[in-house]
Every structure is written in structure tokens, then in C-alpha cells.
Image 1 (tube, one colour):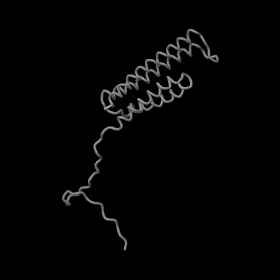
Image 2 (cartoon, one colour):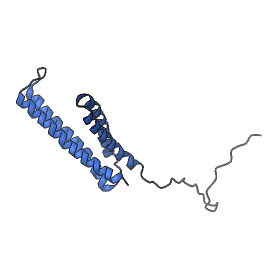
Image 3 (spheres, rainbow, N blue to C red):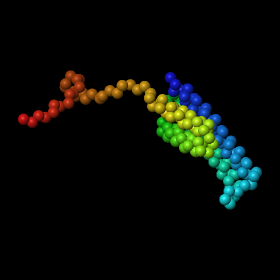
Image 4 (cartoon, rainbow, N blue to C red):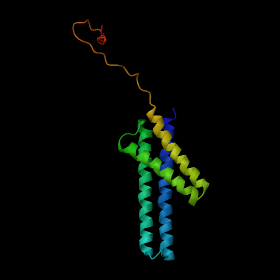
Length: 159
């Protein structure tokens, strides 16, 4: 099956992306701090600190998404509850980042975001299509009729 390898790939990609995003924002915060630049009168120190905090927050967010994918790969069970919501929100975030990346960074960043989006959706879809036993209809068995299922009453007829 492809479920487990996809979960491993998603986990690795999200962990690498978490490190990259956190490192990039940290670097941008250092650049703003050393340049002592101001944007529309904003405090340069505040811009530097907010860039670093944003990088850490997004890095942790992608790391938690990667942790959910890692747990899916280890357990070979579909994500449930908060983990499923986290992966779905990660897919939405990658779709939005891809749209912004197309205009701001270029098509290679867009392709990477769409690739990660596709991997997350593939992870969610492959575990939704798990093999389940055939659905069996409950049988209404009444005592006294030999244990056979009770057929529905006949439809009333009007003369």
C-alpha cells in the first residue's frame, strides 16, 4: 500500500519546511535589526522581534503537522480529531501560501506549495479509503418465529 510511505514523506517534508520557515524568518528578523530600517514609522526592533516570533510560530505549526503525519505513519491509522483538523488546516495554509507565492516569489515556490498541498490531501484521502467490512443490515429477530428475520408488514390496500 502507499499509505505509510506517503505519511512518512509528508512528515519529513513538513519537518524540513518547519525548519526552513523558522530559519528564514529568523534571518529576516536579523536583517531588519542590523539595517535599522523602519517601515511607515514602525519600530525596527518590534519588526525584528515580530518576524522572529512569526517564524517560530509557523515553524511550530508545521512541526505539529509533521508530528501528526509521523504518528499516522507509525500507527498506520488515519488521523482523528485534532490531528485531522490540523492536517486539513495545513492543506488550506499551503493552498493560500501557494497563491501568494505565485505572485510574490515565482512559480518554483508555487509548485513546492502545491506539491505539499497534494501530499497532505493524498495522506488524508488514502486513510479515508481504508478497507471496511461490508455493511450489514441489522436483523430484527423476535422470539417465537424460529429466529428468522421479521419481514416488514404488508402495505395496506384499500378496496
